[in-house]
Length: 215
Image 1 (spheres, rainbow, N blue to C red):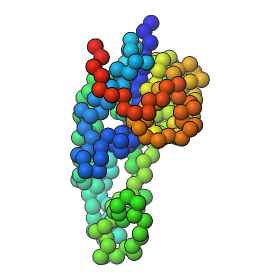
Image 2 (spheres, one colour):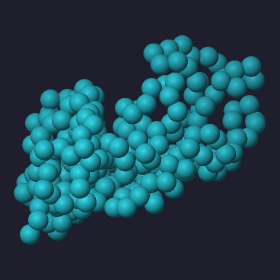
Image 3 (spheres, rainbow, N blue to C red):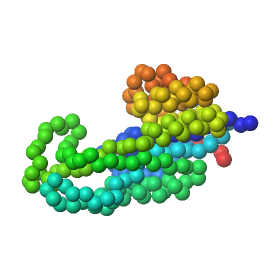
Image 4 (cartoon, helix red, strand yellow):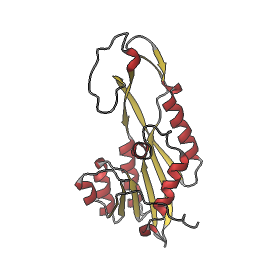
């Protein structure tokens, strides 16, 4: 029986690592290019791709009221439109499976530059600087459950996990205890020592542009 592997993509991490602030949002083509690079890694040669799992949160769609009394239709925002378009494109890619968590609106915060900590009192004059303060829920749990399910049922021999998040250590430990190997792709992102300890192979830089694997 051929050995097989699955690729787990942490969408929040990818959106941060695959673009600069001035770049357009990441596209399905960029994600496909990264997947092809991962498939060409020497450790995965000769193995069968089971599936690519893409973990993201569905955009908020509801109408909400800002502190100044004005309403905002979150589903019509640029961010929501971009994410919905990305999900639609990826859903049409062969062997891609989209797993969705949810976003929770916690309140409002000021749209300041990275590293800026100055706070302003909320007033009619400053309300235009407010943006939704959202929290992602359920994505980490789905990654952990899928990793456990695939290894327990012996659907895959290798998990290729693309993230820099230490929250996945318990899932990585479980997969390895069940006999699967875990490859961690960090795309140059710094990770805690404990994360590398629970991976069999750590690829710290982007895999590189290698010839695409033959079908």
